[in-house]
Length: 154
Image (tube, rainbow, N blue to C red):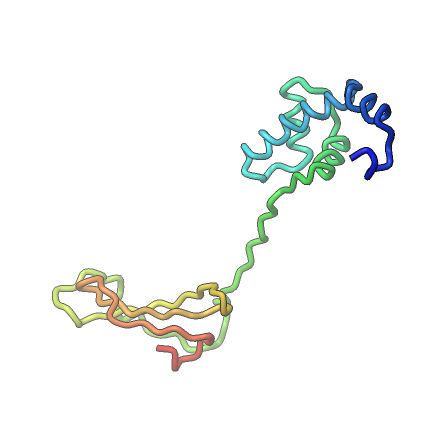
């Protein structure tokens, strides 16, 4: 290995028996504690909160040092996506009349069916799923799936 790396054997053994130094040992302790804090937060804490947690544990470090070390150790935060409102309730389109009026308990089968639509991510992309349920039996009586949300999906 020394020949491949082009270093002398004596230099390698001097390096391998050398103490890592106070800074290296301190960074190892910080890395272990930071990893525990990051894992405990389910990768939600950034360098500022990790730094505050380390200071609370009695370790001396600043946020810039923690940020640099987290980059060095590839400790990444899982960023949550911003909530986006997708429903537009302020439109001029006709609104269907409420015929059910929250009467969800029915006395006989096949009297009232309700339907809903949702989108599902698949390997082929987004697909829309429409289901129809009988309110008496609470069973799905029909469904349809397509890559569009036009009225012929029902």
